[in-house]
Image 1: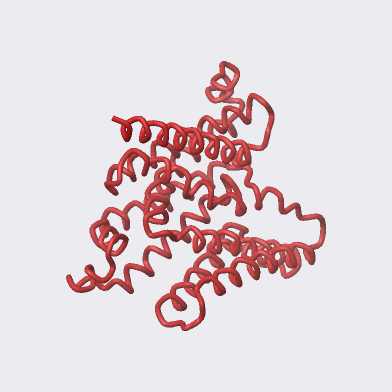
Image 2: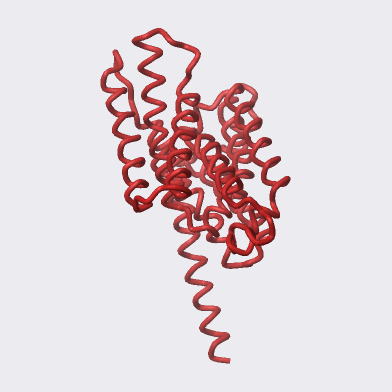
Amino acid sequence: MHDFIQAVINPEVPFIRMALFAGIIGSIPFGFIGSFVVVKKMSSIAGAISHSVLGGIGLALYLNAVVGVSFIQPMGGALIFALLASGILSLVMIYGSERMDTVIGAVWAVGMSLGLLFMARTPGYVDPMSYLFGNILLIGKSQLITISAFSVIILTFGILFYNQFQAISFDAEFAETRGINTTIFQVVIMLLISITVVLMVSLVGTVMVIAFLTLPPAMASMFSKRLSVMIGLSVIFSILLSSVGLCLSYIFDLPTGSVTIILAGAVYILLRLINSAVRKVFARQ
C-alpha cells in the first residue's frame, strides 16, 4: 500500500495518478447509468453495445494504418459503433417484430467479429487484448479530459431528466399516461449507456464492461431499493472498487481490469452471502 501511495504522489510517475483519477471520475457516470441498467434489466443490451464497439476500434485502426485517415481514433470509432448499436437496438425495441434477444446476439457477435477482421487486415501486429480487457495505465492527460467531458455530459442529462428516467424505469405504461414520451427517453437512456460503455472500454475493456456496469448497482440494491440512494451507493462502490483494484494490480503486477472485475465479483458474492445470512436471522425472530 505504501508503495502505491508513493507512486501516486510521485511526479515522475504520472500514469498511476492519471489512472486513479480516471477510475474515480469514470465511476460517477458508471454508478449512475449502471443503476438504470440494473433496474430496467438491460444488462444484455449493455453487453451487446459494449462488445460491438470492438468493430469501431478495429475500423479506426484499419483506416489509420491503411487509408491514412487519422482523424478517427480508436475511441472515436468505438463511440460511432456504440451509437450505431444503440440505434439499431432502440429501433428494434420500438418498432421491430424480431425477438429482442436474437438482435442483441447478432449485434454482439457481428460487432466483435468485424473488429477482429479489421485488426487482422491492419498492417503490423495489433494486439486486441488491451481493448478486450482494458489497460487503465495507458490513459494520458487528453484521455482523462475526454473521460471528464463525457462524464459531465452524462451527469447533466441524468440530472435534468432524472424524474423521467425514474418513471420509465419502474412503470413505463403509467409514465406514458402522465404525458411522458417514453420512446424518446428510452432512446436517450440507450445513448447514455453507449457513451458510458465507451468510457469503460479504456478502464476494463469491452469484455468486462457488463460486470463493472452492473455489479456496483447490484451491491447497492442490497442496501436500498430507493433509486436515488442506490445511485449514490453505486457510485461509492464503483470508486472504491476501481481504486482498490488499481492498488492491488500495482502491488502484485497484474492486469488492472481483470483484478478490478475479480474484486467486484468477490465483494458482490460476499455481500450476497452476508445479506442472505442476515435475512435468515431476521426471519427466525
